[in-house]
Length: 231
Length: 241
Image 1: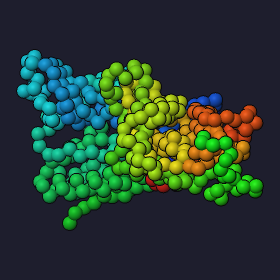
Image 2: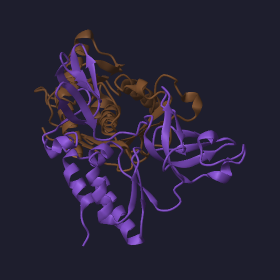
Image 3: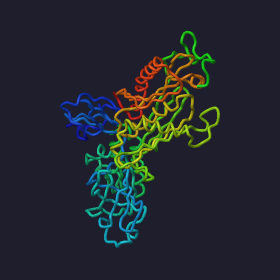
């Protein structure tokens, strides 16, 4: 399997950019993937993005999209509001996620939520459930889920996460080349901790990736930027 | 619709004041992704019209009373800058901008898959920087490109063009003088691929035959503008054929 296929064929080489409404041919014998709908026996793209045809599956990988929470996703959230027994977290999705006190960190009493997590605190949590209106509940009960007291949080467009980091080697070499502790969350956020110089190096690399994020043909260059060794 | 043929705007050879023939549209330039902080954006330069559109969201709809339990709402705001015309426009919402915001939202709701984002809001801001007739059409077209640029799922892209009547002759894509002194105006919004009509207004009088000609002119202008839209989206997103 080529490198391109190893990353889900999303590195832009040979991919075709389609616009909403573009006809993708007859639907017979083909499966409908992300960003595609069927109308009168024809497949139609509903998003701007790269057309991926993987055997029978036809999908469009968008060039830009908002994060949509899915159960089990690891996310980095920022506390936006506190009530007596729950927290509201900004998880980079259209809606804030709920963190009930029963799923929060440690033990806290009714009315004491603010003493545990106050507005502005950053936490690493996991999506517990999502309802049909995309409202989500997150949990901090689990291995490694905690308040993030040190380091910084950077953002990368969520649609790039899979293309960039589905191959574990990219993250591994990104960590080793920057000497930083890094956690990649599914909601397009990245926690980085290390010494000041290393962190500023990570920030500048992420900034470069963000600038190139709209162009699928740049995936290889983005991976190169992340893996670049500093001498 | 200021006069009835008292100003001669088309000669006996069918050439208009700006040198176009009856079915020609003004030069159109579209650029996508021009506002980095927006989820999607586009500018449309249509003749002398210069319109910028930006899309934000989907996001939680506030106030809660505007939320729809089964779909997203399109919150469209069309605004003309005070300096966009020769006479200064008083800043802020007025009846005209409210009307255009409403018809634009309804035209775009026909193609956006709002049911995928219940209880949320998609904010569409349309700012007219320079106005020279046909700003609502340029606004709808710009908003359509900006929505696609933002990754909002849509079954098609909407293109809007207006035809009208000057000196008793139906012409496509009225300019400022033709709009001011013409006899009728027929803006239409059409889905680029399916050809479905999603928006139509008419100002002035057109006979059934004239209406048909205006309709055909508008439909004929969709394909070239669609090409320009696709090219703009591909340029800003690094696409290749």
